[in-house]
Amino acid sequence: MTTSTARVLALLEILQGGGLRTVPDLAARLGVDERTVRRYVGHLLELGVPVDSVRGRHGGYRLAPGYRMPPLMLTDEEALAVVLGLVAGRRAGLGTASVAAGESATAKLLRVLPTALRRRLDALLDTADFTARPRAAAAPGTDVLLELAEAALHRRPVTIGYTDRGGHDSDRTVLPYGLVAHAGRWYLTGADPADGEVRTFRLDRITALSVRPGSFTVPAEFDPAAMVLDGLARTPWTHDVSLRIRGSVPHVRRHLPAEIATVTTPDEDSDWVHVRIRAERLDWIPAVLAALDRPFVIERPAALRDLVRTLARSLEEYAGHDDEPV
Image 1: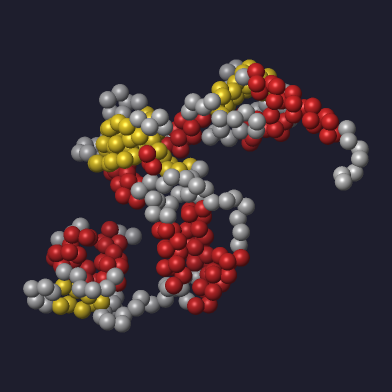
Image 2: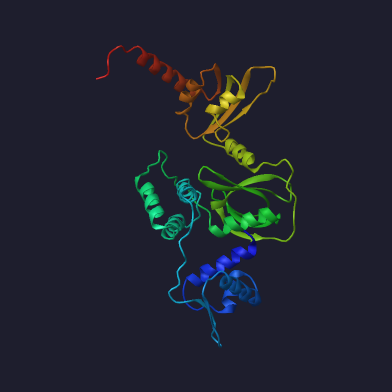
């Protein structure tokens, strides 16, 4: 969708809010000049949208009384894709700070769909359940997310106010390389123009944002998603776990994905890999190691060895029970 088309639709949405809108007000809200507003109104008239022009000192534009948008003509498959996309985004925690935005968008979509299709989608939303509960995650502000997206697209530096995980506030200049949605949160990857160091920032911790003049170039091989996953895996946690596992990297990765652990092969000729995990708790790791079904060596911490031995004793005890469960 071109920028002009998007703004014509934005003009229609403003007029649907009701009331008389002055040309200067519409120009300011759309970010265009008054002549362009009049041209956009002409486009709506060509599309058959009845826009009334009120002349005089306090004149402007308004939709003709009683006008309603016609039903949104989507196929069943298209409507299902849009509604499920809205629901999935809301449940994944990837909405913005306005929690009601996803729900209101879904409601608006359903209202303008043909009656028969709306009833079928209502039935799906009323009867469907999900094995994963909605994620409770802090969401970024809409303006922050969209402004950063534009800055990253057009390669514009930004200055942000940021609160780190320790609660310390700072002002930073960042070259925004890309945005990544992961596990219910949005992340910004970007370089510090002073030293070139690439860092990752959580968008919900950004307290202020301004776009700066200038431009920059993103390194050709830079992968924002890989940067975020690697950064999360290296974040300091309560426990620093170091393991050696006899197995291939793909096999280990099936049980320990990139956001949980770093997996390296120190010696290409060896069939052992080195695994590093940072975790708040250790109690889930023994079961993962058992599921790997490969020899392993726990380098640290010693507490993990005790948990593995406890699991092994429990499994041996359970396997020795011949009685039927009560």
